[in-house]
Length: 106
Image (cartoon, rainbow, N blue to C red; front, side, top):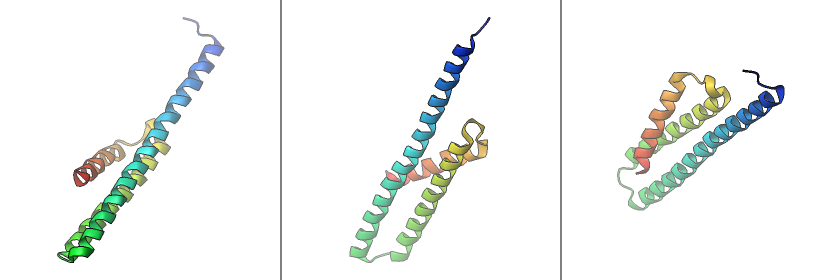
């Protein structure tokens, strides 16, 4: 089967565009999760300030969630950089952190 050079160029460009869209989606997803979680943390902190009960426990939870979100964002940036060559352990940790954050947001 002969494939012309023009066809290969077109396929290469389409592949690059699709890869770029995938990376953009990962980055936008990370930003959206960070935004929602940050707003949720603000809500929890304002509620906590009004009640002033169990303050250290809530702050500890907030710190853990914030650290998880930061780690998730860094891992997604790493995955976007590596693309298809992303190490499996990075993808596994992303899945784990996304599940943890989604449980917290529910």
